[in-house]
Length: 445
Image 1 (tube, one colour):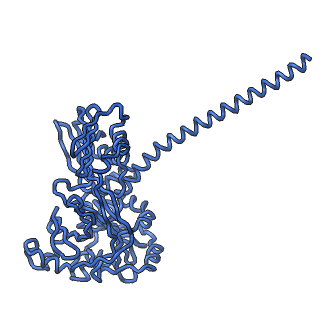
Image 2 (cartoon, helix red, strand yellow):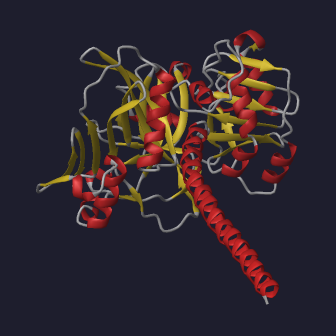
Image 3 (cartoon, helix red, strand yellow):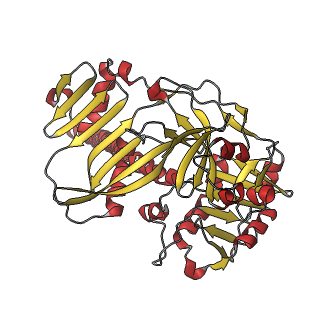
């Protein structure tokens, strides 16, 4: 009996040990699984921030040269994604030292070779973004890139004035053959139209293929939704509602925690301010820009933005930067027609610390993504209608134009919801915006 009893007890003990190990394994698996999920959330945040870095390197337009014709394309996400690494390499390693300087005439002739040209309209040297995502390999000063020419034989990089050729090619054949199957409108550059050495493009048939885009500013109604305000305050102030003070006025709703303030205005502005003491006596561009982009990504998650301006700032002997961002639709820049609030997002940072954030809130209410033909007046008509701007003969005007591109103008703050397709012309370093339909001057920035 005793042996049988001991045998049964041993079986029970073995069973209990096995059960204990099984349950502990389940607990360990759950804890590990939970840990993985927690890490995934962190990784997703970092991934979102890095994605935003990559978005900032996206060109505003692309020219596809094939079959002896030029085609300007604005919606090319898939194509850009397939050449992202090439773009990073170009930004990282293209210096005047290792490139061959070529003339404008030679560069314009290269447009007749099957190729892709990526065009940037930002006035900011975007090579700083490459350093933020760890892609830079060169200690030499990079070329401030405005365009990247890709062909099977070589790459050409332009800085807005000079062009540098690099003896390394990129296979663009598959992309060009795919585009050739689409019915894309033809464009001509100013050299073909007016015989000037300008690689700037106008549509051959005087129309653009564009989407109709509508924005609304519905922040006033969102301010009445407790869940929206609570979610926004927890993201910006990192506190639950119990620790946050509320101040509600007719045109604003402020949430306060210590020396941090988050205010929503019925006019469509979201503003955050950190008034805690500063101690930053040395500027650090990379630290401030990285913190600012991470802040945007984590607080409001805006994609489709591009860096418009970098401004050094000073506050009580503390040194930092203000970074200004605008939106784009299908890579086409969107600009606010408001001299008081000219950017969609502005962030001020001292070192790694963000002290001020301001956003002009907009929501897309576009119903259809279909492209439509939008008629455009000729360049001659634009010049003719603005004699106080273009005071010299047309040939001289052409020589002083350094950029032409399509933009959308946002008049939402003036009660309009549909963005206005417009033509941007950089003339004698002036930034001029003209109605695509009438050719009249709309604004200057």
